[in-house]
Image (cartoon, rainbow, N blue to C red; front, side, top):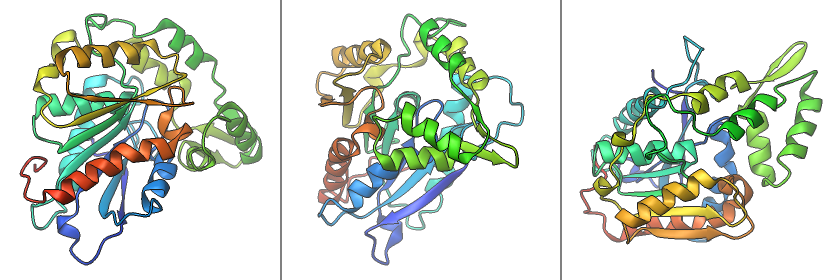
Length: 296
């Protein structure tokens, strides 16, 4: 399915076709508006950055609807994003645009997987706390029982938007206010008599309960582009440490950045920190506009 997305152009002149395109992919249970703080930081960082930002809602998240609405499979979600990237890239009339992948958690893993399937798809990748596709994820394996239980207990319905907003501000109090407001805008759906999560816990749980991805599905040695991986200093997500360690063994030149003060939700908690490697990726492209990598 083609996913819901929005395009924002930052700092552009008239030649939109030659701008790099940043593909933003959020984590499970979130929405494309959680990137609002990161984009604000990029726009106000005091440098002359120009780019096109494409923010995607994963299947059954935000404005992206799943017609079946029963289970979310990793491989299906990965291919959704690839199809949507193809649509977004087709808007480039000069065929000279370059892609930078920016992802968090499940979104980070999605972009890494797509790069291994089509080496050179991205000019660079900036990913935070990717979750693993490794030997622990055999066919039909459970990702993390504790994560499933936490998701199951998550509140998903409120009497009105005031109550829902108070809940989000309290539960996600470590987040930057722009991410909080973005979550309220994109991850909640209001009805006359209630407000609910667009991706309910029963749906998000299926991501962790089963999958059709095996350890053979990803080959880190196929990752050709420059990669920056952000790890939260206070993160308790052991799975992301596993995947980052595996990548470092195969790709010793990847850059690993520890986000001071952040947990797992780095783009929402410290958007100013997350902005820096994205800015570097854009500036690298600007310095070498003839680089052919990153074209579809």
